[in-house]
Every structure is written in C-alpha cells, then in structure tokens.
Length: 231
Image (cartoon, rainbow, N blue to C red; front, side, top):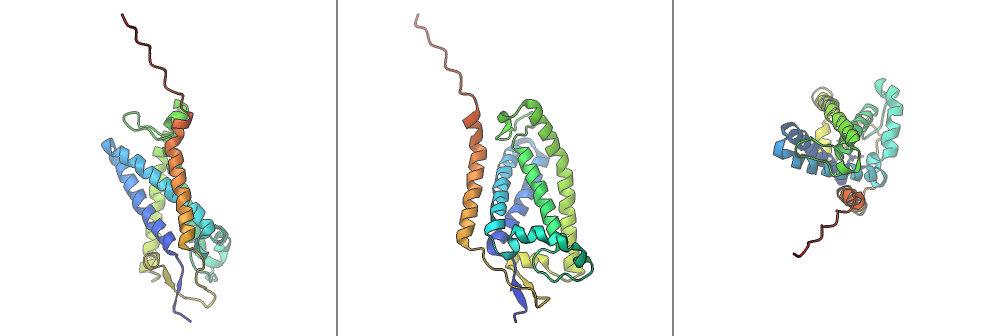
C-alpha cells in the first residue's frame, strides 16, 4: 500500500491557484482604483469564468472535487471534532470553508457585473438594471469585500495551523496533488479527465462571452441619424 494517495486532480489545482491569484489581483486593483478599475473589471470576468469552471468540475471532476462529496462532508463535523473522521480530501470544516469562500467570491463577482464607481467604470451589465438597483448592488459589493477579506484571512490561518502545528502540508498537496495516507480507508481519487476539463472550460468561456455580450442584445438600438438637408 502506497504511503500517499492522489487527492487533487490537475485541473482542480490549476483552478485553485488561478482563482487565488485572480482574487488577489482584483482586490488590489479595486483598492487602488483609478485607471486600474479597467483591469478590476477584466479580472472580475476572469473570476466569473473560473467559478463556472468549478461548478461544472464539481460534476465532471475527480472524486474529491465533486459537489456530492463536498456538500456531504459537513454532515460529519461531529465525528471530525471527536477525531473519528477517516476521510480524504476536504475535511468537514474544510468543506464549509470552501463553500463559504466560493459563495462570497461568487457574490462579489455577480454584484460587480452591474456595478459602477460613478466616475469611469461600469460593469458589463450596468445598463441592464435601473440606476437605483445598480447603486444598491455597488454598495453591497463594496461592503462585502470586508467579509471576503476576513474569510481569506481565516483560510490562511487555518492553512498555517495545519502546516505548522498538525504537520499536514496542505499547500504541498495542492501543488503536487498528493497527500499522505493516514488511514487504510482512504482511497485515491478517480476520474477528472482532461476531456472533461475541456468541457468545463468551454462552459466558462461561454458564460464570459454571454456576460460581455448581453448588453448589446437587450440595449435599445441607437437613434437614427438626423437627415442631412441640402441647401
């Protein structure tokens, strides 16, 4: 029996690090503002695509990436706290953390699509909503960033605790995809082919395109040009 098992497939690891870098860049550009707001909007669309990829990958991905396992894991919180949990992948508390982080990132992304800074930036869906609704969502977008930053801080502290105190290198596992086998019941992840990853990527690209194009479909046509009179 091998001392380690495959837990995280390559597409999931690529998603994880891409999302981490994109969110960090989006926070930085949104904080600085100004001319960087253009990049803030582009990063928001990239994050939207990444989230769509993750949603699809939760169905097509390998064992421990699937929503069926992640959503069921919190039911074992009691056993986990008593030291009786013997699973692999996200622990029950880790699954709750993943759901909370993805939910907050998703809210920030969706509320940013119709947002405006009243200066130079407007989200791609800004003109599809009433000005009052857009202003309300923009306010929520600005306020929820503090909750997201708090969740990110807790996530990083948990990773540090696991690595430094419990000696479980979660970061290394998310780099090479493997984790030490602690119990005989733990099995390697199965599934998650590159063909399935291409399907998930196609969905992501489609949603980004739809978000960018939606305004052009529903916006009123431009007014006809005034006729020129020959004198």
